[in-house]
Image (cartoon, rainbow, N blue to C red; front, side):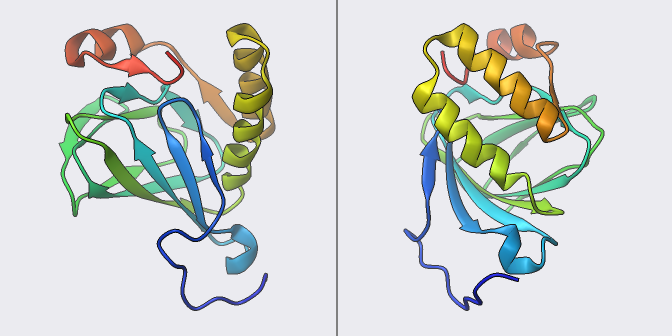
Length: 168
């Protein structure tokens, strides 16, 4: 395990911005024996995270601020502060800021490791020469981390809720 911490301050830790979704790294897998990691996601109003499916980890989101819409498999819901959204591995899912103000979720990832995908995506976002290179490198990272992307729900969700996909 990594260095033992007993308190993680609100503004402590590395952060990356993914064109509409932030990643604030709070607890790394090395600190938990790779059992889990925790990140926080600030989400701009009207932003949709690309639909995706994890093959290695489960995600548990706790809504801290705002309203968060989510689709997990064939189920869709809106979650307010204090609610949890469960996103099991192997089931396609997406989420978005469903309100007019910024939203924020705390994400527990189990087992740990996927936080490194977010870290690498921060570099891709900063260095990709154009949208095509960004998508190519995102797909490569997805393969490395057991993550598959799909456009299946994008048109429906962006139209119904007036959303913009990350990066647009």
